[in-house]
Length: 193
Image (cartoon, rainbow, N blue to C red):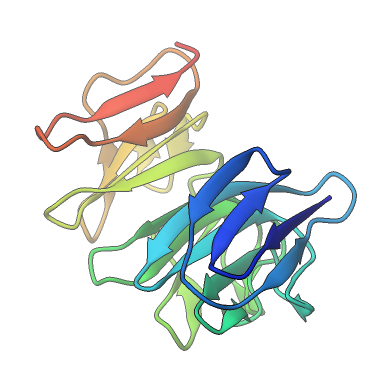
């Protein structure tokens, strides 16, 4: 399948779902057989798109691309496996989680960070992160189907404080798939628990 971005910057998925993207530019996101978009993150005047896809606007992008006023662009070659979650890290870097082992050719197991110029590993190796949320203080909350990580036992909810992952409050007995924070400061988690 494909996702077409028409003039005026509207991202249309199968003609049914829409996301207001940056004005200007057109292009196609080529997902190949079985491809999909799993994550979107607003990025200034554009949007970063993550998932499992081959190319965007004719560029080989490695499952991760940015759409902005000039059309599609790559983020350092992307990652070598599917992207499941995107967020901004404590220092403003792009944090990517998914089923990959390298980012831009740099070894990075399941998590990587992009500083706008280069890729590097991010944190420890927690696999199966389904979603990420950046808190106002810069900490990250990760949810998914993971049950352990580099720091020990982490049951489906973990918090990154800038140096270590710790188990989140109210750990879950089954998979968490989505996380959000409304303006009142609460954290909402969705899943099959």
